[in-house]
Amino acid sequence: MTGPIVLDCDPGLDDAVALQYALGSGRYDLKAVTAVGGNAPVEHTYRNARALVKTFGVADDVPVYRGVGGRLTRRIEAAAAFDFHGRTGLGDETADDAGVPEHAENAVEALLRLSRTYAGELTVVATGPLTNIAAALIADPSFAERIRLVFMGGAVAEPGNVTPTAEFNIWHDPEAADLVVASGVDYTMVGLDATHRARFTLEHLARLEAAGEPLEFTVRLLKFYFGSYNHFHRAESVPLHDPLAVGAALDPTFLDTAEGTVFVECGSPLTNGQTVFLRKEHTAGTSLPPQLTERARGSQGKVALGLGPRDFVEEFTSVLEHWSR
Ligand SMILES: [Ca+2]
Image 1 (spheres, rainbow, N blue to C red):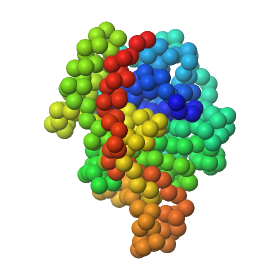
Image 2: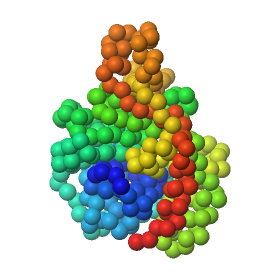
Image 3: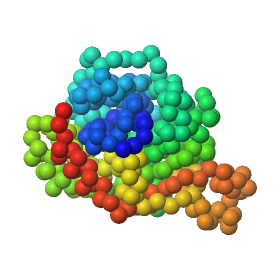
Image 4: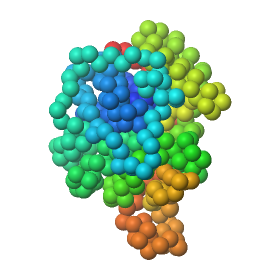
């Protein structure tokens, strides 16, 4: 069982099944879902998140908070991923959020409050751009000392998925991401080096289809995801980006990680949003400028460089196969 946890997400097809996985496993003490703009603008992701807790039967148990909207990064045009995640952000689904409570408290306020209630225990799993997390750190830098952060995003040796060097979540708000990894927060970056290897295949999908009615919604989401992925990347299987980050928050053996420092490129039109990883053991010998070397000494985290010994895709499929609400 995890300690208290918040899912900060931008649903988003893989955010949706990541949430369902967390609920289905029964091992996540989910205190809240916070919505952030990314795959779709925050108006959509907030509605989608509320529709998802309703669909998954936890609308009375798991409050959903709206992100602050906008991004720290103002230099480049906001870009949602409607072409990949569909017109609502959830494929062709109509997000039915009727009756799900709305809260005056926003996502940043909720994150800060929960970080105080569960100081030193709270895990935040971020599966969208890091805008909400950065906004919480700006409002209260000591937020960094009270939480553990596991985020899906970035790439080290793997090419990017939105530009040749940048992964979508980081590229969408690079300044936010850089602020977060420089904040001193205890973080684990689950980027494309790991998620591109967590491949959910048509055989896995067939197992969920065999479960029938309880998984019809999930199977529709995953089929849309397969369709988008095949259209854009010519692949016959899909990476479980966001679910893997949720899985790793509970069991780090899903990942192969290394310790070190992440820097986010925020100045180059070519490599904007690229994550640059300096391994801990290379910190002393680096020829980076002194201010970056100093930062490397002061803010280190874990970065997934591949998959670990435990098979996450099997775990994910097996949890969802047994889904019932
Ligand atoms: Ca996401």
